[in-house]
Each structure stands twice: as structure tokens, then as C-alpha cells.
Length: 87
Image (cartoon, rainbow, N blue to C red):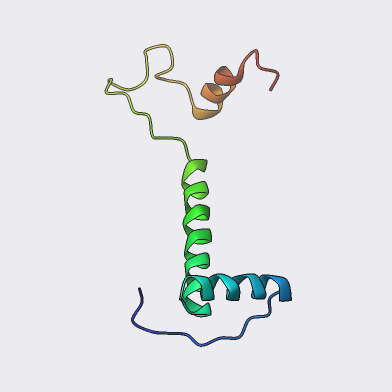
């Protein structure tokens, strides 16, 4: 994946280490390969969740504000938007 390899030390629970080491042995992979694969999966999943937070951009190809709102300031428009919603 990358061109540089960072050597580091991590502390993990004994049972997690044993399970990962067992999986690596069964799949004929290194512990490092299993660890990297796990990190990639977690990061990919987290990225999906981040991108779901933002709604899609909605645009309208009109000519701007309607005549009713054209001369209003933003605060007045905001008040109108929430009128009757308890805010």
C-alpha cells in the first residue's frame, strides 16, 4: 500500500493477540498482515460513517429568493423558517 513502513510497538489484550495469531496461522499470513488488514477495515468503515453524516447537496436552478423574501435579512428568514416549530 505505502512506500514507507513504520515500525511500532502496540499493546493489545492477550486473547486478542492469540486470536489474531491463530487466524494468521490458519490463513498462512503474518501477524502484521492480519493487523494491517484489520486497521484498513476499521478505517474504511469509519470513513463510510463520516461521509453519511452530511446530507446530499440540494440545489434549485431558480432565480434566487422569491419576491416575498428578497429584501429580508438572514435573521428574519431564519425566524420565518422556524415559525410554528417551537424554536
